[in-house]
Image (cartoon, rainbow, N blue to C red; front, side, top):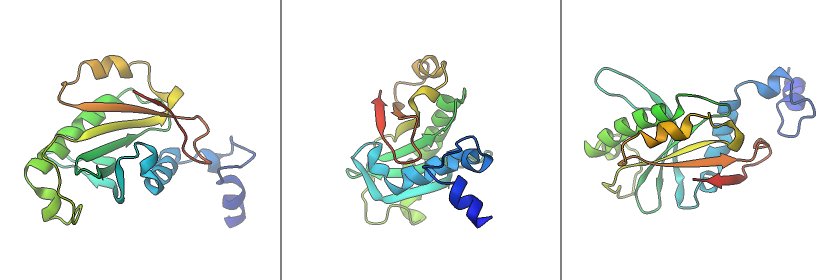
Length: 171
């Protein structure tokens, strides 16, 4: 099994159709982004990257991919997709609402997040990160209907993101 993982679950594997190469691609993408979050924008603070963060309201639970902060103290939500996902903008808006609420209530310092950082009261910024050709065709239309208060940046990666992140588009 370890040999199969070494051969097939490798960024330079020759058989990119093998199930071990294709399995859990979003988690693979998450681990690469988490290891070098400054590739998304250089302003993010790589010391504070929280993965699979619970974003709860009184009656609903959600888990966002990555929560981090810019060096100036503004929170950043990174929602990652390795494949097309029609609900990506709405999912990100939902997480934005929850994270904004936690920020307003002062939950992050209280629970030990971002120790030593003075968080800005500014609303969080959302980064939608996916291979550039994997944004669903409805993404732009859905983004136009979100509140202008929600700042969203689409970050398109090169299709061959497994060997290393290369940003090819920012909108």
